[in-house]
Length: 342
Image (tube, rainbow, N blue to C red):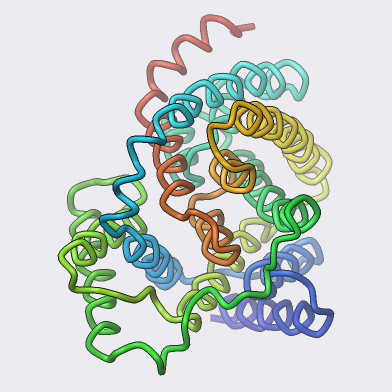
């Protein structure tokens, strides 16, 4: 019980400090930063997984509520950039696997699943089945998500002068009570049905599909309120930060440093793809960055909502990326094992 109380207290302090200093995204970056510092200081922290997953359903509802007929009509125009997603995943693998295996000295299963930009939990599960070092995977994957999420706001502000102080939605008091009830229903039912069906990312994709169906049927006309989006940010940030709980000096010297080095590679590779897509006139720069940045689906969805970007465009590319990584993992692992075996 104490680690749970401590993580809430630490995350709350992070929000307060970020607000006091007028730093961007206090409800997301505040908990990440505070929990990371506390973990490095040896503070024991633990989240509540069912509650964390419940909060992610809010993002699924938020995205589903944006999928109006007019937005869906733009989907066919996305195919040129969607085709770039598997290419980018392949480039990440070709660079990342030898980086972790030959430069950092990890075994092949650990190197492969540390490289793949899929869902954090999915990569840990797959890696464990393949005989990878689960603790190393957890730290490297958490570092990937954390660095991308922390770096992106500053890129958005520096390049596009994005306003990250915008509320992510309308106040709860301005949304009809029956629509709030429908959102809760879509979140719970969509999540449970998707989980029963074995859908990856069930806590986000299930509510997204249920809410989109209701929106297209003209039954929903609002996104979740700002208060709900802030709560989702808080729990997502806290979850990322707690991944570092119990980290040792040896893990910092090897795993954390290796993860940071890989993040630098990912950022450069992402910017190359973004510049190419923007130069070819295939998509706007800001949306392309949010769509191709190999962070977590939930975290990038939050950023797209706050900056007022094309949420459907961003989410479509992240869903495809995760699908490509998860569905292609067994085949790709065999190919990479033969190519990069010691």
